[in-house]
Length: 128
Image 1: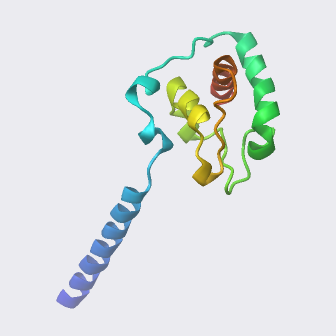
Image 2 (image 1 turned 180 degrees about the vertical axis):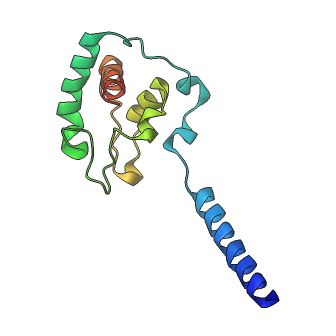
């Protein structure tokens, strides 16, 4: 009986360690956003014309990878209707659009005018 409890305790310890190790390696893209950028607000929030313009920007620049419905492909190209995006601030999203993440296939959209990036943020927030 003692061996059985030790075995269960040992297996539980291994499972806990594995879970903690995995959790330590998982991080958010938002972890890298500077505080000043994270705190930025979208100056176009609440403007329906900004959402409509953002939908056009999305169609031109994002839909090819993230699909027309923004649900991605379930693999390398993630859904933009996720809790991850939903939990992001406007500033997080604009920063990420500007910086990109080439290691994960996301180009920088810093060449887009700032107004178009904010329109895109307005659109992404509207589809959540």
